[in-house]
Amino acid sequence: MVSVIIPALNEQDTIAEVVRFSLQEPLVSEVIVVDDKSEDDTVKNAQSAGAKVIISDVRGKGLSMRDGIRTASNQLLVFLDADIHPYPEKTVSRLVQPLIENECDFVKGAFARNAGRVTELVAKPLLKIFFPELSAFQQPLSGMIAGKKSFFSKIDFFTDYGVDVGILIDMFLMQARVKEINIGYIENKSKPWQQLGKMSSEVSKAIIQKATLRQKDPVNLNELGLMHVITEELGTTVKDEMQVLRKMVVFDMDNTLLRGRFIDTLAEKYLFEEELNRLRLTEKHPAVLTKRIANLIKGLSMGELLQTAATIPIVHDAEDVVNVLRSNGYVIGIISDSYQLVVDYVKSKIGADFAIGNRLEFFEGKATGEVIIPSWFYNNLESKCHHEVCKTNALMHISKRYNIAIENCICIGDSENDLCMIQKAGVGVAFCTDNHLLEQEADIIINKPSFSSLLLLEEKKYSKGTVQQFHFQQ
Image (cartoon, rainbow, N blue to C red; front, top):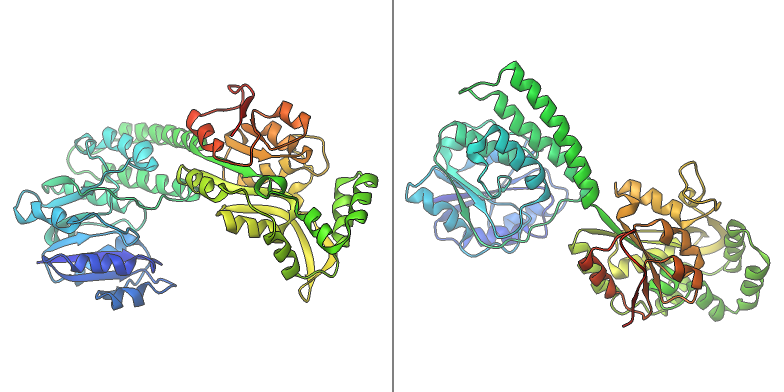
């Protein structure tokens, strides 16, 4: 019989399905969920699905795997990831069949999906250098594995992202018979960009540490020096490659994502259009204008503001296009000189990753007439234009936060307030604009209220310097 072990941390949404899937396999007599001190309903959901749950003493996937091995009552063990649903049919039987037939001692599960970025940029190159015998493995970092308890019990588990490749290397060093099996198609969650550097470091550390401890043909001082050089070069290469891979799309909100301007709609509803137009004609300082306009909405409640925002249509395909772009690896955000309360509302409607706007102050749920312009809108030593307040400064701020070069950003806007951002971004898009200067500076012009052209833009891989002004008529 087979024991399935599932290390888990805050996987309440999928853990029950993984447990039930495992118990459907006739060969499985027990499912053990090793909880890493989850702060959600992972434990409750796992138990209700029929798993035996143990709590790991210390956080770390490797330690959880070790605890699961000690608890397992069977000699054939399968490890599954807790965050994948659905698994391909017969995943468990495909993993254990080579063990049952005594073809091997350890099985590494591969699946029909392109290997991840850390696999291609870090794990495979290092394995080719230090463990060429393992370089043919398609997915050396896969966490879906099976093996004999007698072999697992001898492994010194890493506690971090290096655990899976460490197990593969240890099995090889123990002269276990190792086999890779394709279990079918799996769509697992991509790691956030912020985690990839940490993952790269821990995977490379695991491979190099195992290489230095290799009993047969031990590494000498010259090779250690070579390792140091290789590691430095690898770190530089990975950093450069990650910078190239990261990409972002930034939308303006008013008259771009929204088919109208929020403050104008509010002014029409609450009858301060005349005062608003007068301010726009007489006040030329952008920060002062922003503060004086905020005074016009003094006394309005949060509910009244959001109800007004809800009356303005969002471009019909915005949510669908954002979903596709995010699935293609883009970070999606909104930078607006409107109010954070409204920008956050639009962000939630389209599924963006971030939103930046001006912050209205409220007292007892009503606007005080005061507004705070976030510091990252203001000119600083790194500013790319001379304006005191500019969206480009916010773009630089957020691109640093996500470690994405501005050259890898696509910015979409409709007005002169978006001009600098569109000029400085990798690709600037003028959207349904009547501003001739913006059209002249933009790389792409979209004349109809639809964002589907952005998917064509991604497909054709346009970038600043290679794009002559291009019009999308839809």
